[in-house]
Image 1 (cartoon, rainbow, N blue to C red):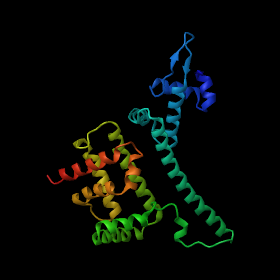
Image 2 (spheres, rainbow, N blue to C red; image 1 turned 90 degrees about the vertical axis):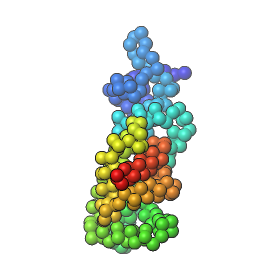
Image 3 (tube, rainbow, N blue to C red; image 1 turned 60 degrees about the vertical axis):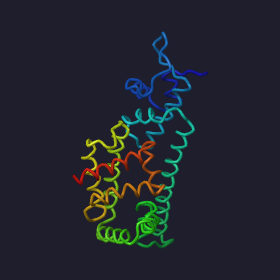
Image 4 (tube, rainbow, N blue to C red; image 1 turned 90 degrees about the horizontal axis):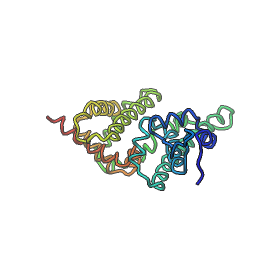
Amino acid sequence: MSMYTVKQLARLSGVSVRTLHHYDEIGLLKPAFTGENRYRYYGREELLRLQDILFHRELGVPLQEIGRLLAREGRDRVEILSRHRTMLAERIEYSRQLLRTIDRTIAQLNGEGTMTDKDLYQGFAPEKQAEYEEWLVDTYGDRMREGIAASKAHWSWKPPEAMQAAIAQGGAAEAELAERFLAGIAAESTELDPLFDVHRAWVSGMWGRECPREGYGGMADMYLAHPDFRTHFDQRGAGFTDWLTTAMKAYAARQAG
């Protein structure tokens, strides 16, 4: 089995020696052993762990969360890599949508095609929005149709960048909750209430009207019912969907008191 010093691993992986030393210091990537010459040596297991770390970095996971994620993921390499592949494939498809929009815009500016105003924003809108709306109406009926129409009316007069900013805010609120999940906080803990206050306020902003506690609890059922939501949430950690929906319902129930 090949063993690598820090310098050799740095050349092999493209990660700097300084970064590898830092990973050792924070316990994220320990060497297999330290020789009598005080050199750090890394084997196959450490190389695979470094690959995991780099995948998480590419997916935008903060460094302080990666250790917790690796601890939760266990040692099933096929499952871990399959999860990475799913997330990267989704990112590639999203990038392809944006590239198509760029290409069509360049073509139009060169007089080689036409685009509607709506076409200018393809790839920027929430993915599969029309499909989700159809599923919601089929599942929850006319009240959901009315709610979707009201939300669209609320956003119709706002510029596209306002929607993008709102989506980013929702992602940040979701990330805060994921941090508590990864830290092992119980879903029923009242410690989560301030975070759910923020998330519920974000939902109200997206709807263009107040999100009642019953509606907020109902969103948890929606997250559980559609497989795309589970795929999305579980990207932050296996089991996050179940934890999140349990926590949302517990939070909504507490608001009745």
